[in-house]
Image 1 (cartoon, rainbow, N blue to C red):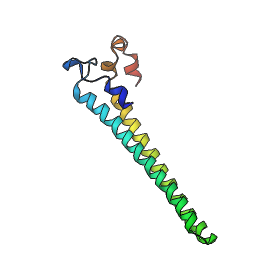
Image 2: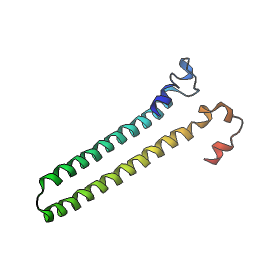
Image 3: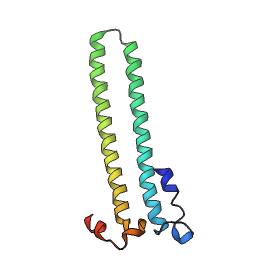
Image 4: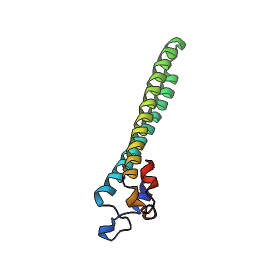
Length: 120
């Protein structure tokens, strides 16, 4: 998504192919970039949990200790997954809001038909 957005730079005022200001483009791009960075961080945290799971499974020799530790680790993983999903939802809402606010500028064919703008 970030690579696709880069194809729309620079803005129309600087010889580009999009009729929105540089600030609007930067805002949309920044929201998408924040989402990709957050997704990457969440994936790294999940891989760290998996690594810790594998390491501790080999270190714990007592099955009762392992079961207690495994339950806590799974709770922590689920909390992190829920947090990552909530972050992703909020980032997608920000991106959607930025796009809808500037829909008339991003699509020249919709200027005659304001139905889409009125719908959202």
